[in-house]
Every structure is written in structure tokens, then in C-alpha cells.
Image 1 (cartoon, rainbow, N blue to C red):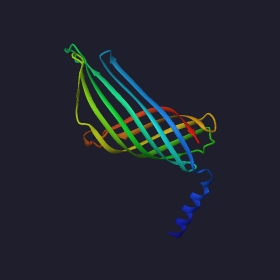
Image 2: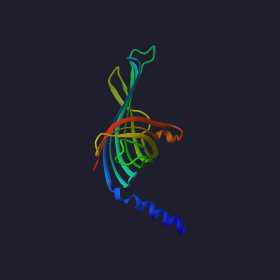
Image 3: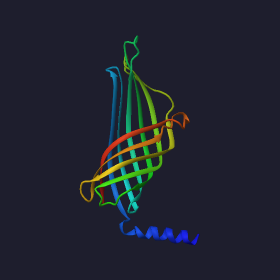
Image 4: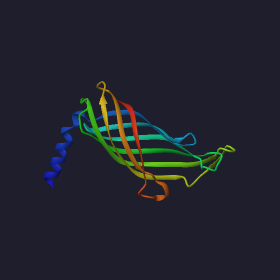
Length: 189
């Protein structure tokens, strides 16, 4: 046990020279899929994040995401499409592990943690423009994870891309996951 404690202390001290770096980031995600003009899906979201690197390649990241999904469905015999909306927001906390130092041009990373997910669903009847609540709203803490790549443009400015997943939270079904591909920028300070 004593050897494990000494190893852990040596590990933490060896990275202390570059600890304390902070990162501010912003990301955007969009996806459109169409069958025709009346049957389509659109998703957009924005994310803002703040990360504190407690070791050179390990950080705690806090994030806020807000977005909307729209789906239009029109049955063959129906003269009007029905629109479904999902407004969502997430407050996340993740452990981020990078596989390269801050001065490396390419910085691959993985992350995992939890997010408080809120979703509200609406239905719009396009024949009369009436929008009503649809389904049960979601307000749950869900697991999340992802992976991505940052590319250093300068010592403090990066562009980044990531693939992220989180449990959907819908109907307490643990087998349904949402995912997103994001692109963004970040600054070290």
C-alpha cells in the first residue's frame, strides 16, 4: 500500500509544472436528413465549455449545451405535415484525458462523465399552426462519453472536433443513446 501511495504522489508531482491551465471552448453541431420537402429531420446545438487541467493531460470540464431537433412527417393520405420539436439542454461534468501535451500540434482526447439532461417535446399541426406539448418531458442525470481531436493553431488557440454520446433519458430506457458530431474552437489561458 505504501508503494502505491508513493507512486501516486510521484505521478501527481511530475505533472505539477503544467497543471492549472484553463481552457475555454465553444462548439456547434448540425445535422439535416431529408426524404422529401415534407419528411425531414434537422438538429442543431451549441456548446460552451470550461476546463481546468489539474495535470498536464487531465482536466475536469464543465459544459452547457442547448439545442433543438425538428422532425417533419407527412403521411401519404394526409394533406399537411406534422412537425415535432424537441428542445434540450445539458449541464455536463467530464473527466478529459488528452494523449499529447499542450504544445503538440495534434491532441487526441477522450472524455467521460455525467450530464443533467432536460428535454421538452412539442407537436405542431401545420394545418392550423397549433403547438401542443407532446410526450413526457425529461429531467435526468445521464452518463456521457466521447472522443475527439484538437489541432493547435497557436500555443493558446485550437480548433477541435469530437464525437459525443449520452443516454437519451427517454422513458428511463437505458438502451437508447443520443449522439453528436461537433466542431469548435478553444483557448488555453
